[in-house]
Image 1 (cartoon, rainbow, N blue to C red):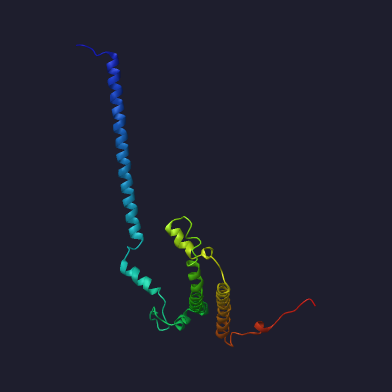
Image 2: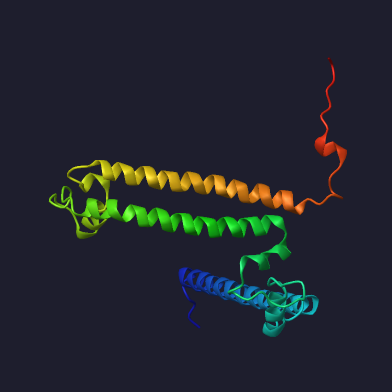
Length: 200
């Protein structure tokens, strides 16, 4: 019988060994994936037993229970007046009164500022310069677009500043009055009206 050359035998053995290593690597990868799948499935089953299954109806009921309610337990309507917020305490009630005050103050300030806004738009100083349409729209209402300013422009700015100054003091007044009204005679102690002086 003819014998294979030694080089061919070595080459064939090396190829067989490389194939076995590749097959072994593939087997290891398949085993790792299978073990990962089994472990993940076991962890999911354990967590499902430990934690309740999500329920949309229970979640909605819980969220509904957190909504604001009045003294009788009824949900507050969206269109309720400011007195509805007294059930949440003085802080929330004062904040809602302050929001209502700011709504009025900003409406008055915007109404007063409309004259200056129209004056700025009719100026035409910045519209003649090159730029995008969006840039022209935003710069048309600015002070730089006005060609001239007159005393009425300044008077409007003074009025707007006066509105916001009034709103600031009115907001402080709301807080102080509400704090004084919420404090009953039983809450007042001597410490509220006493001054300790020492080291004279």
